[in-house]
Image 1 (cartoon, one colour):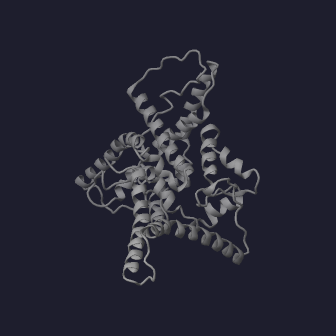
Image 2: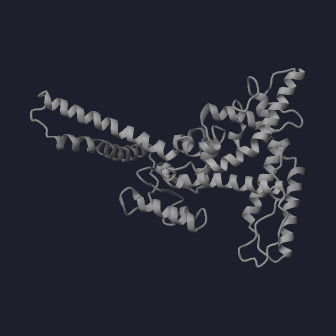
Image 3: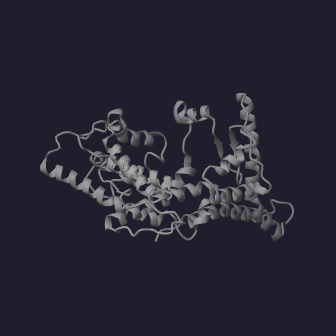
Length: 374
């Protein structure tokens, strides 16, 4: 059993805060005993100094960072993003309010609340950590396109999402991001994504599901429906294996007086299980962001992504193993006449096949990590 995010977080910060404080205490006591300090320091002074050392340093860093941010903004002729006002130290009330709005409202409600009294950008500063949100089209264009390389995901985001996204294209920066993008880019060229036969087929299934539900006079969860449509289309397009979550049946509303018993085939059960697990894993890493940098404290006893990701991997591993077996067979038969090219995609080749073919060495599950690019 691995160490949970919460235990690792606590151990790291105990070392980070405790070791300097202990060393400082020993240094004070040693200087006092050897007469370097004129007065002999009583034990309570040494202990108090050791305890207050790191909070004092942290306070200085916070004050200096605020000062430096204002100074740098003045140099550039810029202005800092307005900060959401908080009532308590560290703006812990904002943290609690954010969690409440997320759990009781719609996904964007909590951001809209803070943006209501400001411009199109707001700094929701929780526990002395800046988190800036913007709905300005020019800002978004700058971040995603014209100045993309200057806006990295950063260590904090990578750590919170690594248990689901691994070190794939969605969770890395710099050269590693370029490397992953070069491998996956051939699958998103115009000639590949403009082949609408696959999407038309799944869209027809969506319309059939909607018509069937409307005939019964019951509501349908449109977000769930679109999630299943995306999952089926993407899995078939990229992996060559459709999850078939649409065929597994969509949920009925809670006020339905009669819910027909649908045939629970093994395929339908696996599809629903995979869709639910994948959705749960995404919800967990999204929730971590709303806890700020202390998110591991909410996962002291377990990594909340572990169970859903075990289901996701159980579904994807056979697909990966099949791709590896195909590569091994090609090696054995000697049909591979040229080195794999990241920019070249064979007819009928899936993303998994492509990534496995680009991997070096003998095919093995441990050496191939395409699931991290999901």
